[in-house]
Image (cartoon, rainbow, N blue to C red; front, top):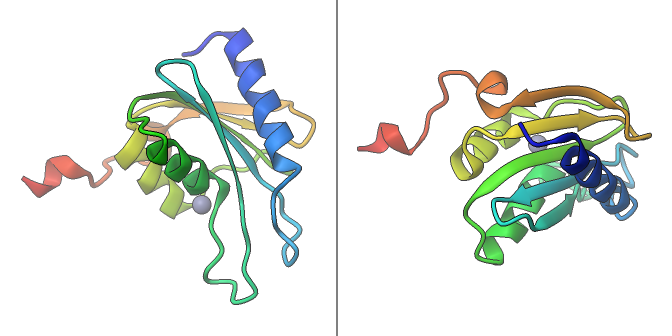
Length: 133
Ligand SMILES: [Zn+2]
């Protein structure tokens, strides 16, 4: 578990990123901050599309940005949204595949922690690369 100082820093970064979320249809704005093993913070926002199905979640946007920067090892992710919701099923799979079992901090729009959980708690018995051998 990352310490409280890191939790607060990560939540603040996710709150800041959330201002740029592009959600003109649902108005459900999400900001994510992903903490790498070398203590870099990479953010992401949800980006909706008028065809709805092409919308991309903040969690996967943050992970794609991190991978594009050459990052491969992660410690934690903070997700800020109205009510501090959990990631969707698709994102749980991608978080598991790319980040492994990391801390996942769920905070509401005011930055109040609603839950601190983990990938394995959110996606037990996950399918992964171990199943492909
Ligand atoms: Zn998602």
